[in-house]
Image 1 (tube, rainbow, N blue to C red):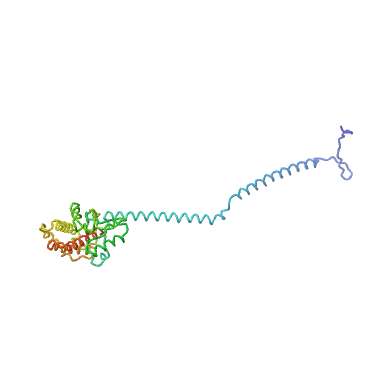
Image 2: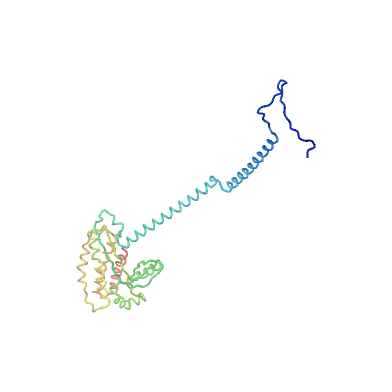
Length: 316
């Protein structure tokens, strides 16, 4: 308890020596204001601390991300790589598609095969569809290396032995005779001439695809329409002459008229067709000579012409 009783204290205000009763006196409680100020200051400090922590947190979060300008170069490089790769893939896809279409057109005979002479001033306007045709050969062997096949053919030709090469995919086939059918092939390959000069041979059937030839002259078209039939007749008569020997009576007269027909076709500009025509004309002369002379050398020369025709026709 207080030692002295509390007495009510009054404040007296004198103005010009006269005591005045204060009206609307405002008492400023500095202790209360001080406590209030301290409280507000603590709130401000507390809020400031929170704001500082929040700012620091935001700054740390922001620091975890690399500014956009720092990634500008890698981003552009990666985008450029993706664009280039996409362009390459699209280009390859278009290229393979066009290649597939072109190969399909060639296989279906939609593109005629011509050589450089087809583009001369005398090129024609005729068009012809050549159907698929079979060829039956006596095959000497199949080789993986073209040089080996060529060397073998060169050795045969030095001895006037007919031989030709046809490329078949990754292999090279060496043929030594053209025959009318497989039965004739089996008989011919057992003759002493083929056994002694070629060793073991066997029949091989090859077939051309249907093809379209364009920009032909009228004579070129007429020749291609009849060429294979004349070839087949010559092969048949030549084989009969070889197998029958002295008993062969000859039936070349039925071919003579056709030979004269192709001989009259002189407006032939394409070199590949010129070679076909010449092979038939020369083959006819040698085979008809063999039918008369029975000399095997005439047979060999006639067969060389027939092989040449078959290879050129197959490769058109």
